[in-house]
Image 1 (cartoon, rainbow, N blue to C red):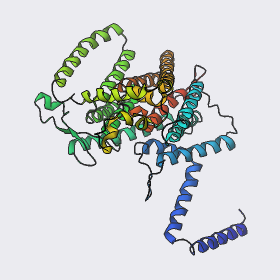
Image 2 (image 1 turned 90 degrees about the vertical axis):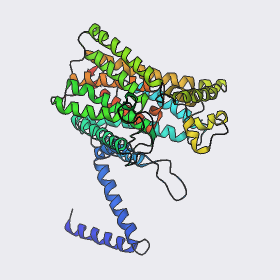
Image 3 (image 1 turned 45 degrees about the horizontal axis):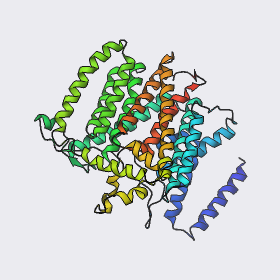
Image 4 (image 1 turned 180 degrees about the horizontal axis):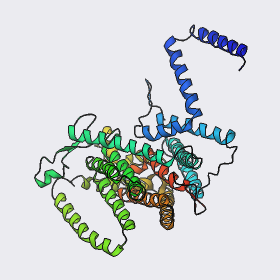
Length: 456
């Protein structure tokens, strides 16, 4: 820039800044300048926003004003900035030459149309928010594909970011469970060792920065199953890998989330089955272990460990009554974010308003039945099956990374389906985001059945 032009520009900015002081307090102006500088920086480097989404997505309270809660939070803002930055780079840097096509494009279009219809016709005034959030999830999927295919983000770096987020949440949850402080807010008699006469069965549940322990458990299980095959096939320093896996596993344990533990066990069994040379030998080992697990469950069920399961029958009956209200609700549901609106007539009238959220379906399948109906739920399950099939196909690849990602994706989908029997965390935005993030990693390396790019 010409020196004279620079001087004139600086003088103009000084005049503008000086005039703003006449209308706004100085600290407002300073905050605005810093915010503008940060926005420009993040826009120029969208991968910074991308990393921040992964790290901060686990803490997603809505922005609040003095009068109301806004229908968005910091994760939505970061995704919007990242998407805008990526779009500008595709337009002006890559000139639309980057190939973002994947094997599931048609499925994503189908689901996007389904969620648009369910959002716009919802019983809830927040139905549009459900559609917009699903749009963010799909955008994040393609941003993952973009960053990895352009090599602006290395897979090794991404794994480190994932492990950082997982280990932070695991350690935080463990500390909450052990100390009963640092944000711990729920106690129960689910202490495993207490039933063996070792210590008390009354324990604190770790929840990390999530609002509930039933959210932290599935999140850590996702990170565990994502990293487990990577550790097996790729990581050279096995000792550090085992330490990471141990922390993540103990983090799941100290949430005392039964559905998370059961689903994690199912995912680990699938991993073990695929990595054992002798399938017969594996089955011979699993059968006696399964019998021991069943005996342990019967023992725990005789105490207070499983008492809350009886309440789920009541919740499931409410969901079934809501779902079968009319042929329309059976086929199409009540729309996104409509569960409480649709189920309210069936919830007992003596339940206080503060406890109504406790009467959500507690089932991934029933929750989706109520909101998107039989058609939508079937489409979602077929989408999962399609990803399982694609994950199976990766096992024939010579690329160890693709094999590891294939096993990880199938394990995580098994986690979703098993955990969904008793709970519904994967209906929430943060889990949809992480699920599509993992899918984005796998499909970024797949193009027409061939591996895309080299191992980082």
